[in-house]
Image (cartoon, rainbow, N blue to C red):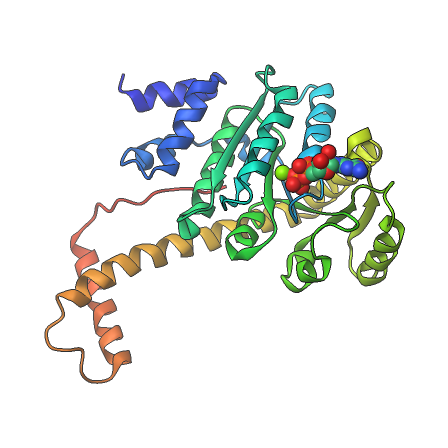
Length: 317
Ligand SMILES: Nc1nc2c(ncn2[C@@H]2O[C@H](COP(=O)(O)OP(=O)(O)O)[C@@H](O)[C@H]2O)c(=O)[nH]1
Ligand SMILES: [Mg+2]
């Protein structure tokens, strides 16, 4: 048995080391990644729900996640967490803080935590995060929670992997208006006003209700530190999940995510191939760029007919 088989077996047996190694193989772009991903095909992939939790740093995302973990563990569910670390020098401390807070569940084998850095991985982050989610689902996690700071395109892309997106805001923390501009608020299914005991929470709540009342988006008040509002939040999540599964919206969204992923992969593969071919292109690319582009693509298509075997990673949810 080669070690990929060993790792795959370990994932299904819920072995933390196998799960950790598998995610590293994907994250590092190890050449065994393709072989590994081919074997990660959980039949239950549609049964697990993926939650995206996003919002500015310091609003209480990690605290809420800890409370949600406790909630789902009480129900007997195994929980996965993929924390996307913005890896700026400033957030180094915040990231460490996350780990410490997660320690509450550190001894629990049915809580799988993995953080991933965004640094230098804009393109590949989404694929790696998707793979990590999938590996966790294969190991029996439901739900899998993705935590990300909702800034930048990379993070928005990651949030799109989620079936249900929760935006966490808090009075006096972060720039809410900026979040709205960033479009994160557009994709939120639930907006949480955390730190509800703090001054400014009520006006933030009302402002959000005003902005969001035309949209089918729930706003709820939470005091994560005291677990206040967590049960209610979990009920909202459960209701949305149930409704979407019943209406077919759940499957549709997964299909859309899958399509986007396939296209991203195809473009990535094309880009490398085009660069390579362009280097070998005779002349100085004089003439109409569009015509040259067409010719390059036609050449690839002709070459493709001759090669049946292509290395094609599969990271589908
Ligand atoms: N006052 C108050 N502080 C909170 C609450 N929830 C979390 N915090 C604090 O807010 C800070 C940031 O929380 P954290 O969960 O790390 O936020 P994240 O950066 O969004 O993950 C921490 O010091 C928490 O203890 C709350 O309900 N009320
Ligand atoms: Mg955090």
